[in-house]
Length: 622
Image 1 (cartoon, rainbow, N blue to C red):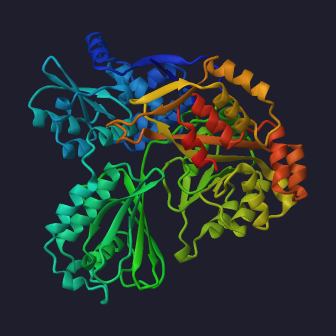
Image 2: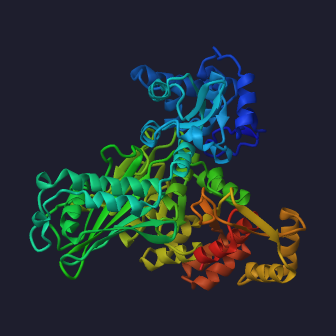
Image 3: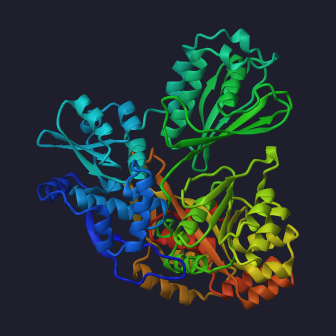
């Protein structure tokens, strides 16, 4: 399958040039062997020259990047161009593969034999970020994200004592493949033996006494907490819950994967205080405070994944104990708008809104729905040297050297509202607000938009219309809001069907009729119109999709997630309704009359395309 390179889109412009085919993505061992046979010699052309030749950057942009490199010679030119927002990671990967003459692998479809996986131990694979793919003529082929980094390759060569052939794949795809192929048995089977070998004097951790300081903790408790975290990461969990228990009752540790919360293990109740102390110490939380909630962050764990941040929340319970919730936030490459799963129409409209010089663009969804990811994608779309970009977040999730990023800290009084009040006076072109939850922050966001800035703000909301109404409920002036709001994106995450065990069958006439009625419910769409649209888009033989469950997806039938989106674009009719503070049903009717497709409709479209199934779509769009 040919991979294409897209030109970075400067603000105010839409790139309509034909896409440029650079390299093929290899998705099978046979194709890899053929590609390596015709492997081209390493190009002597410099990276910047090739990017100029492909018209991905200009001479001015290259010179600016070279000036940055002159001040820090340790940084690769490609890294600088990416940080400046001039090229995407995908474009760099493709040009680098072309320059080095190595294949670019599509890991999601690449079948790896078990005996190849056994050539490298799991700890080496995870720590080095490499994945063994196959053996060719006595040489081991491994996927890496940076073929110029020789250290991981040397580790592999030393281990297997054979020549190693590096090929390239995006880092996030390698990490996902490692989680799939090196998935261990059910974590509870591993945690219980570890808890049995803990040689700690549990009398020191009596629940009725003050929590023991860190220097008194047995090293086995440290190892236990680290293992809980690494096992959660390896299993693809998004959250860890350490539930409070009284006295000698067992402590339940549970993982949330997707929408499901399942038990990981139970530990002796006498270890409850020790576990809590260790987690709180790692997160920089007061270990002696157990009467009020606290929040903290863990940036790294010993011998654990390097691309993982953990957010910790402790919640006091009625019996004087504490529940602990830990959110796992892997740091990934920024996703481009066209990788989020938006329909072509929605992605193009978002691009037009992001190119506006001023206004308020809201991104709404429940916690964990990917609103921050979308906000970053929008910001990256409009990133340019002639724009001063500020972000206000808690915490800063992705570091971009071209942006001025501020982390909110309510404890010091440097909260969202205080930061926004300062940023508004700092001549911003673009401001991203990580979460807008109160009147002060919302009013300052509107003020910034009135002062000729583009504000991209994430907030909680079930739909685009409800998000707009919620801003009004916060007490923001309706006339000011109507003047500045340009659009609202609402989103959800639905589980994606596993491609390995995917199945489908034709829809029956009654199923098709019911699905059309569900699609049209609450809208002005006509069933005959929808039937024609679906036939044109998916063909006359419409199908229902599902997955049987297999080893790769852990028997669930799902692997990964897909975004569902609805976009409310503001216009004269919507302005008038907002100024009059009309109810949400009137706002919704005007939005759909203006062409908005709902989250449910976008979900049904994705189910018909085979990306998810209707059970999942209905569950997340209730």
